[in-house]
Length: 391
Image (cartoon, rainbow, N blue to C red; front, side, top):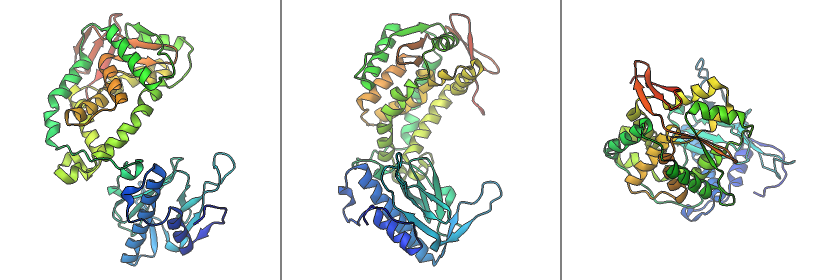
């Protein structure tokens, strides 16, 4: 089907047009290259599988996910399918198109369509809108996993199978990372500063790393950050979220076979994120205190919105543990992940901005009580890390 202007198609014509829109069939999908081509293939196959399931069941209605409030479930006739092709640039004056059933559907701009549970078609578009459709009233909506898969990557990748027993073997390293969060030894400013500069240069090779200024405590750094009038640059996005995204996505796909291979409950449903989540939980349990909540409570209490961009060991110890877990089990970390891990190990807390990094020295003491553990800093300020619920 040519991507050109068209009216909205409905019923069988809409379903046929949607399948054709995502490209011709191929018996060699492993040879496809590039995210658009591979994602379109997966979209097409998901629609065909959903329609085949409906045909096998003799179903003529499409069911929506039951309401979380009262369990009510809407359904519409299969003939209510509608499709309108994407036209031009939707950001300018184009038409984002649509595919769905009845009044429920998604734009074709960046659309991703998958089946992760039998009889449930899931779709989501570039704008974050999503819908789920069942081929029958009892479709297992709760069993779906909206997770990265091989068709979200530009090329195929080799699987990375890690046995569930590796989690137990990693416990001493997770405990060491947790202990480092609470450690009260003096800050090695020279090593930390070099690690910050190294990671910033890896992420932003076109610019010189900003100077690092050290503060005695998180509260002192936040006050200075607020008074600096630098603005809300969200540099953490450029130093962590964006640079690590491709590696995290690829790792999720590579780990997707672990459950099928080893059948352990921690590797539930065989998704790579389950492996990551298991390591994150291990790191949290090893620490025993809610560092994330402690930081958020302090930032909110002081009313410094820019503080949400914090990074460092206290903020990213779970992510660091996951990367260390991967490395310990044979995965090669990319250069950008390696510099991030080095920086996170060396810097206890920092608030990065394009013109200055507000870095915080380690606490000088840690005092446990019935509420949790209080970190004491050299300016005599304190930060309470509450005990984890159930700890």
